[in-house]
Length: 69
Image (cartoon, rainbow, N blue to C red; front, top):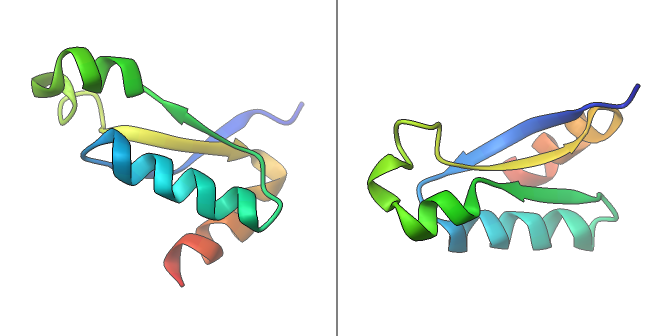
């Protein structure tokens, strides 16, 4: 199965959304996880690992490459 993999985490929703959009411009389907928690209870964001961006496992290496450039 092609499970979702976290490729990056961010302290806020805006940064995670930007990363998601960047990945989608490259043709990589991405999801923002924990955005609601960060919006409602931002003080929990750091303890839950931040706002995470996930992709399919087969796209993980390429996604990390895109986000690091």
